[in-house]
Image (cartoon, rainbow, N blue to C red; front, side, top):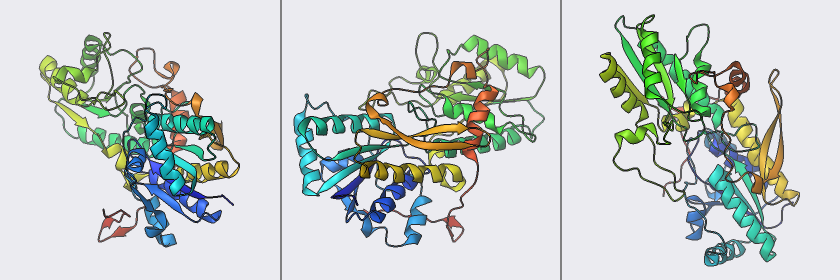
Length: 409
């Protein structure tokens, strides 16, 4: 049995399966005899303002658990708060640990991506230095799939499934007309192109897939891009291109910067991207005289709970559940990871890893998974990603629409 209470938070960009990890933490902790499972409202930032809930007030039946697993976005609310270093601002840590002691919290779980693992790293290291017995465990989450060490991250499979499905529909639509057209589809991905690479999964017996794919791992050249489009137009009337929002030119500038006077930066120094497809569509239209359209998936790819991967939602739950078991065994300063045993049949196992070796390390698409001309993805990526999108889990429908569980304040 776990001693003391549990607190869990969600941080960073939401996913369509992040609440399945939350359920995994909650249910496993309760099954282990924990009296209270608290939820941070809006992550560590909300907790510092003593904003939290008793999860029992919102999960009162097995139906609520199944409903929450099918609810998109972050049930508890999220934040993008950069925790300062303890030697720079120790008061933040004093205040935070006082709140945890007041709630008799012995186990702290944070569901998030790279920046969230930085928070787990700082809190667990501070606890060790000060002799605190509170354990800190990271539960991986990010559609970007850019967390180091782990084979993949919960949230990625469902986002990849949405992207590949939507690409098939866009390609079908683009080929409807006999007239010339160019469609540029923008997909999330600042420095890692895992999501944009997923557009290649749309290639099948009934679909050609996108004609070109551009990832942020390689330099983007406007002239080479234009020449590729012109070459394709010699043989087909409709061209569809998938691009990462974070593609950069040789000088290190984001392509979308050409369309913006100023770019907002968050507390982690990340520039707010977006508009790459719209800019490139205008560029192609002006250069070729062909009707060009830009499509931006934006937040749709991370909140589409109506088309989640069953495998993804199951693994998200497992990550949360195994995090509790890790704390039960007295571990701290660790993150749950997935290790792949085989692609076919698909087999994985969970393990744990030192969060100090994961936080602030970005995993990108291997360069040898990108074709020599930097415009497509190799079969190795397909073999890696295709098992992650398998299976479906339908939402609970009420009056023709999906029903969600939510906090009404």
